[in-house]
Amino acid sequence: MTLVGLVAYPGRMIPHVLSIAGVDPSGGAGVLADLKAFSALGAYGTGVVTALTAQNTRMVAGVHPVPPGFIAEQIDTLFADLRIDAVKIGMLGTAEIVETVADRLHRHGVKRLVVDPVMVAKSGDRLLAAAAVAALRRRLVPMAEVLTPNLPEAADLLGEPAAASLEAMRGVARRLHALGPRLVMLKGGHLAGAESIDIVDDGERQVELHAPRIATRNTHGTGCTLSAAIAALLPRERSPIDAIRAAKTYLSAAIAAADELAVGHGHGPVHHFHAWWPRG
Picture 1 (cartoon, rainbow, N blue to C red):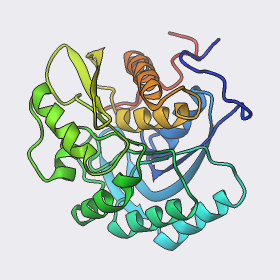
Picture 2 (cartoon, one colour):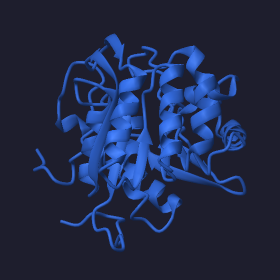
Picture 3 (tube, rainbow, N blue to C red):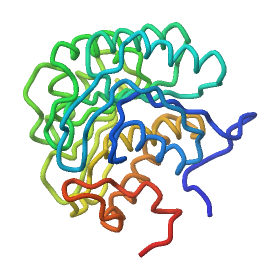
Picture 4 (tube, helix red, strand yellow):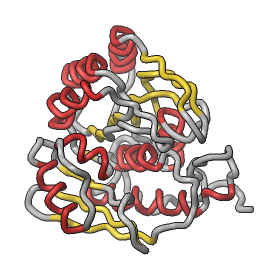
């Protein structure tokens, strides 16, 4: 079986990719979901845990942030031994954790960074303190090779109402790019319509990525999985936009196969291994 969209990775056959995020015990989001996406796309996955959650497909019952000093120790110990080819950031939770992660990534010279500004869970529970948004915008967004907000997250980052149309999304994407990332992938899944349309902005041009909207409630962790897929593919694709396109194709197929899993009674996870496991 071949992996669609992958090219040779000169001198390093298997990329090493790091997820810095929280733990969702149900496996649909956070570090556990990221590791699934890394594995499915041919990357060796590593993880630094920023928060423990009591969570299922219906709710987040509790969040226990990891002490920032221990997060720094996790990162430093990992980089002291492993080659890390790309990093994906998910749930950070607090301003102090944002500052700690930014300091460590700067110290270790990370260049290929995907920032998924995880702020609210699919259940509606908030995962990033309001006071941490400014720290995220100031410290980590400018470091990103790819920034992947959905429409509510983009509104939080910019301090404005969420875009309600494709035309409004174009302006939002350009304003996000002005915050400093190399590329912005603004996800349009919250808009209505037969298609899910995302906009990729590099500061000079904008590209629309189209995919059919799939009728399923099992969309828990879609943002985590997409950003993880981009991070897994960045070291192997010819350009960041190629990695983004391939990641969106992978996620669309994972959503289309999500109902085969039948996990939980709320918003279930996508099927990360749809191309590998026997189909029902």
